[in-house]
Image 1 (cartoon, rainbow, N blue to C red):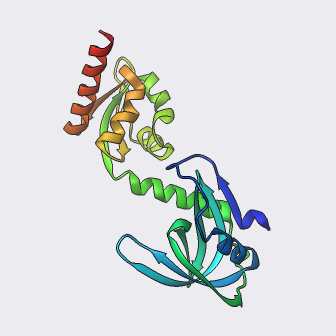
Image 2 (cartoon, helix red, strand yellow):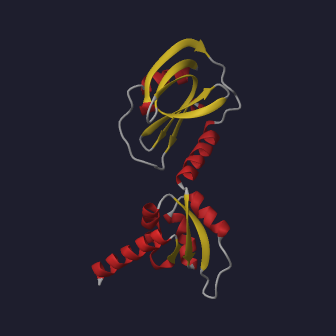
Image 3 (cartoon, rainbow, N blue to C red):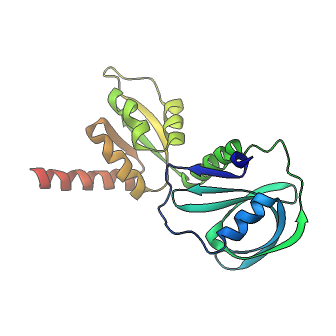
Length: 203
């Protein structure tokens, strides 16, 4: 079934364009359930893997290959595949494999891997409601789970997973005066700096 071989995941991580050179060869192998030898470029080296290509996923202009290597399913960026050599063997697909479920798990793992830092923030009732529109869904859920008891005005203190101070500042600025960063100091300083610049701009 095509739905188990190809997936379009529209919401973006990073924007890129143009199909990678070996996409056609990989698509053929995916469609024909043909085992291939992949040469894959990492940051500082190249590795060779014998893989069973199960599916291709298009995520915001970037293609990913989902393949079984040994007993594990792995995800590879297609633009980092430098060579594809079909070996002529046809593999038996695992009928239990669910591409959509697998990709949801991969996407969630990717987001969690980015959110390696934490910020302590104070949110108004409106800020709490709007948080899910300003940050990653995983981060918003974690903040809701970690929220303390509201004060007399309905404000709560919570822990928010963030990627970095720079990214967090850009996200939390969307909440305006409905959010106050308490920690870490670097992020609080960034927020104060942005607030001062906005005051000068509109003052």
